[in-house]
Length: 329
Image (tube, rainbow, N blue to C red; front, top):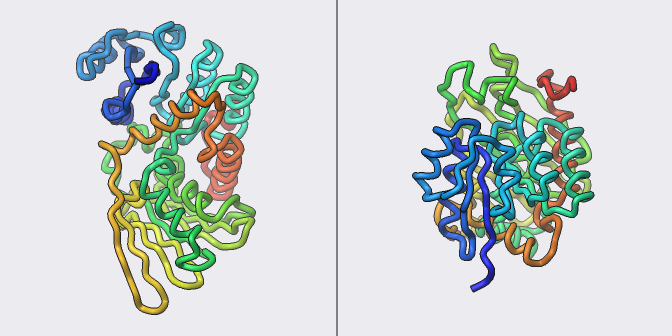
């Protein structure tokens, strides 16, 4: 057994609970601490996951000597502030996506991590799931030929009030930052960096995008077409097309649980790609692998990729006219 790596969770919402559950499936991971802005929330979360240290402030978690790495699970608008606080306190950081509100904030966070020699990773958990790795292996094998096109959808009906974080501009609401980041990130995972992007959107009454469609040209060749929506119940599928056929990641493509390869000669095959537990274990395993190897970033989601994707998100938002308070700072 290796020396355990001690995790802290900053935030006690739905995504924090999912990550805490995922940590149960990670060998040599322990969860000694959680933080909320209220003692009641921290205590409730701590009881649910048997966490001994339950902090009523985020700073207390950052300063906790029993913690090696902190998972940030707060609303989008708080990511930069929380990450800077944790890095300044000497902690390694796994920060939920979207990494920050814009590229300017992302540059500040990454610069501090590099100065302090702390590990930092954007929690784009899909990149670390077995199905995504298998899809990339198939693409690299040449089975579907040179990939020239990726099409994807991530849509669901967000039946929430205007105060919900999904629609609240103060909290970084909107379909693009919440779910559009999946087709963006995974398209670049297969086609590489983005050279150009064009987008259109439908803006809701609170001023955030409720549907956005964007098309990208990639530097190494190829196009991607992506749509995200909180208004419709979409298929949530991705199709990766090459000269010899295509690969389809089925419903909830970001989990990569099943895929089908269809070739131009008419042959087809499908396979299942199971993941550990609820899937969150895989990104935690990658963080721990990197920490033990002395790495400051993961080769599967580098700092430069995070910066480039934040720049694309900034460009899309400029095109569709969505601005946040962080953009005026």
